Image (cartoon, rainbow, N blue to C red; front, side, top):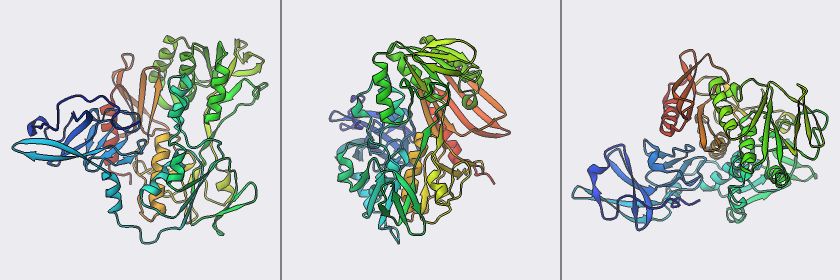
Length: 514
């Protein structure tokens, strides 16, 4: 989507407005020649950029200013005010940038500045020693973001991207949301069109299974026996969906959801289905339930926990999500499990039996660390990396679902399975492969969509001893804070986008743990 998707509204900024209409530290949505433009005032200067986020067209004027940047209220993308460059995923493309003039107490937005973001990149000094060959193992969020950032950083060496998938990198969050629900066309799903890879000289090898990594010889061996040499390597193998084992668990009508192929298969089955069983009350499981309800399929959710998503959100917010789904016709069978699938019947451990034209397992994922283990890299419930995302082997980096990194805020080593985290790690790893020495200190963020209700979550809380709720969960207007002792670990929110952004910024500015 372009940064000008939003309809132009507000004052004509080309005609000029009083400077006092935009006080220091504020923003104003306006228009220039039919284009929607955001006018911002920061540190005494005025800036004009496209007003819609290039990720999902979120309204930047409803976000926050942070230093010389603006942050999107929907999914926390970040853009530099002076150039329009997207400096934080999930947005990857820049917004447009306009010239600004001040005269007689008024501010005027003039012509668009072409290529402002690219020019700012070109002005950066190159690293002292650049690799000639970068190999990326994995075709998901981290791998794609790394390849894109390498070219954005003016890296001119070879980039080989090895993906086991049969499709180019896709917008995976959409697979359990709008695309699965039938509300988004498939051409929204690829992160970039096919020509992007040839245009950027990124050698994307689909259907390529890596058999081994030799950290000393500096090459990757493919399943067919061929080798690919590297100077720097990024392991971005991601995670694979857990698949429960029980009688009938491999039947033709039982699915997991991880890839575009998985999603296509579920959609094909759903076209003639009347009833579905979703195993697991995770974010993915419940997003699948919502998507199938959008297709008018009767949905039953079976899960062992007493409250959906209690481990991540706590009982109160988990129960709200359950009620929300029940209002849309979803049936829950909690503290129960599927014992078997026989034809189009799912039998539960409790003795109940459910009609199931299709069954979808949403029971979490596990990191794909086999290659790293065989290569002798240090592991601890993931691939251990330092603050720069480098593994125990020099020149080999890891990012995304497999990486366990030192969290600057808590001092703990953490591994997070979030799309935005994977993209941001891919970007940081790319810059570090070029010698930038940039610490990965981004605060984890994810969002989940249930019908018309978004849940934003910043931080990381594997365990907590106190939950504070500000607002009314049932009224869909709340901020939920998760504490361990006196340290705020994470913040979840519903329809409080600015509070979510401010919580993220506050966590970034917090004094690191000793």
